[in-house]
Image 1 (spheres, rainbow, N blue to C red):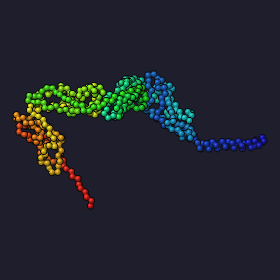
Image 2 (image 1 turned 45 degrees about the horizontal axis):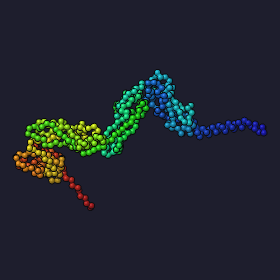
Image 3 (image 1 turned 135 degrees about the vertical axis):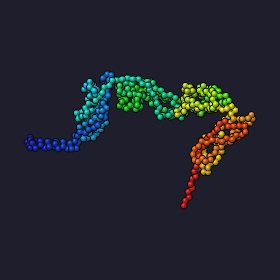
Length: 426
């Protein structure tokens, strides 16, 4: 038996070695060992608070990092850049006296031995900046969101209203605005929520996620209080002084004379007690010694009580006109549809720029007859006028005992009548 085992021993050993070599060749051909490179953008910096009163900022000029992994083909086929984790521990920095500070990078990847991973460059360049803390007031914004129909944003508040932000001096110094955003889309009740702050630099550019990661920014609670909107609020105007001798105040005209207001429940209740009216104080308009109309633009917001505001998009201005006429005069409104058009060219149409004109008339006798608008005849003459827009004098014919106080003009647009062409099948 022993002779059989030892017989041709050298040949048997050679056969085993050959089998092993063949197996290794087959394995390497089927699943060879290779080296593949990957690119990553960021390296996580550990122990950033290791150096007191300093903030570490990775050098933005360092660019990307190349990771080389040596492994079998099957292992490499399952690896992507997202599987690679690169860190740099500030405690392991080579020296804190240099700028930038060089911090060794350690790379790990599941399923790969650390000895088979190489990173280039091997160190993360870090600048150490002084730490700074500064206080900022928070502005609150609802962005493009809008509350439900019949409601307006009454107030936007943050709690706290101001905060302290800590970070590197270079970042703290460029902060221009700290904003808390809240959405009120289709809301009809007050909204309160905790939100993260958005920070903008002094040029109005929002700080990036990387920049924000270097700042210690707390969250705040934001409240949006919604107010109901009430329409048909009357605007009442008055004046002080007297016009010149021989003149009188005909009327006070306010445009617009009705507005909408948004307000808290308490403010709207108080407004109702004032007959839903806003009064412009008389001292706002002085007509002393005037011989013609006095017109003044008034910012209505200055007369709104606390808890009231104009709806978003509404004009803050109203126009107050005090109509001043000679004594014995009156103002009449005529429909422009009642104005007779003379010498209109055939094939044209005429449109007036407004639906009414004001006619000021003075009585010249002692008659008690009342002048009706139907007794006033008005006309415009289009003689020689072609297509276009004109400011034309309005001729006024009055009964005996009346005269026109001042001339009148009206804007008239003349255009050609378009006739649709008729088509027929041949």
